[in-house]
Amino acid sequence: MKLVLISDLHSGRKTLGDLDKIIRNERPDGILCAGDISNREDSGFFDLFEKKLKSYGLPAFIIWGNNESDDTRKKILNSEFSVHLKKRSFGKDFIYGISDTEDLGDFSPDDIRGSILVTHRPPLRSTLAKQLRNGPRFHLCGHLHVTQGIYKYPATTLIQIPSLLIKKYGVLDTSTGKTEFKTTLR
Image 1: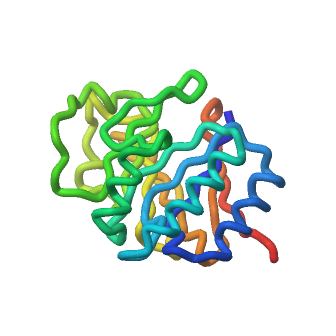
Image 2: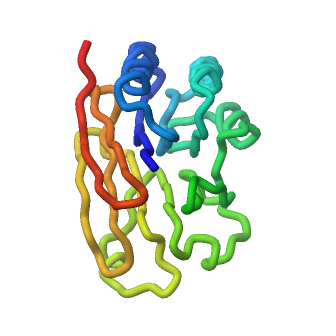
Image 3: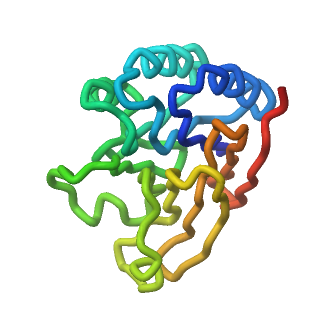
């Protein structure tokens, strides 16, 4: 199944138009956003983003990043698209999210075993170098804006998603594991 990967919109109004183009061109089975949807107190942007996601009629999976306000975090948590500390199906896979927070609550390592795990910040590479019995199949993250890449570790395959603000996004074929990074056109 084809999953569009975006991150770090930071309330960029033009990113919503870019997302329309991406969805039209890629025809994905789902959309995943690795946080920093809005900037600080701009919770109104999240409302626009959520409305846009609903208009596509596709499964969408979102978490918050380090820039969302408490109000926006609550909106994301209550959204039908939230995967924060939740396991949601996507075809034969499932997606589990851990938002950018110190208040993780209770979750079992079994929740992420074999999953598509999404976090905002990248994990520590020293952790990924270990063979973890509860490791996710893929670990997707944002936060670094211009950095993009696919890194294979014993624990997982890390996919670093670039910022949609710079017109970059990824596409993951969950059945083959193939990932591509692309640029939107104006």
